[in-house]
View (cartoon, rainbow, N blue to C red):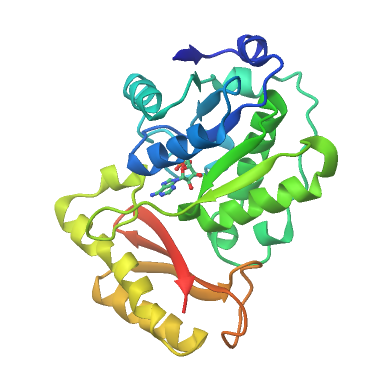
Length: 278
Ligand code: AMP
């Protein structure tokens, strides 16, 4: 396992390869490791699995948890190696964003600005996500990149960005991995480490709300069912929405694939989750 901090060293190590990339912010848990194992399955002999570990400042808003986000590089390197990665790329902010860079900033797709979900509550978030993901794709030229359905809007944003950018990353495949959950249903997240025991119990409201929404007959009823359960767990709701699974725009009926999406706060900890509907 090689740990690389500098862009030049990365370029040298990857020369002539088409790696499989798993972009992360570190503090790796079993959800991340499942993505790395999937990457390992997709990679061929001379195509390394690269895990990027970078807490990207540009995707955090003011007052969010950038400075206290958990950082544990040594443990992350060990666990990503055991899941099948060959290279951990852990750059500094300066090497990711040198002042001399002339990289084209991708245009945000509609799914990053229109739905009124993460885009409304974290208005600068997807510009930061697209910036860092585009930078990683430019540096690494992966043949595939794995993203979790846990961050469902992000997955759609990245997929659309790749299509919009056309030939910038030829033949790059965006691979979706299902959400990995704790035994009791809580979606795994690096931010779960912030939860005190009582908050941990309340956080179960998210997965339970999505489960309840599955049996609702239409999107409006699904949203009511989600809100009821979130409120009974004393969660502060940012949104609890039943949407078109491809555009994330509102729908009246289940005449196409749909998705339930939730963002809610347990005290100061903000959690997200989603699932297919009905
Ligand atoms: P993050 O480190 O939170 O930026 O996540 C890195 C990647 O791991 C993203 O593609 C996430 O969607 C994915 N991911 C995070 N948590 C999970 C989970 N519980 N199940 C599946 N994928 C996940």
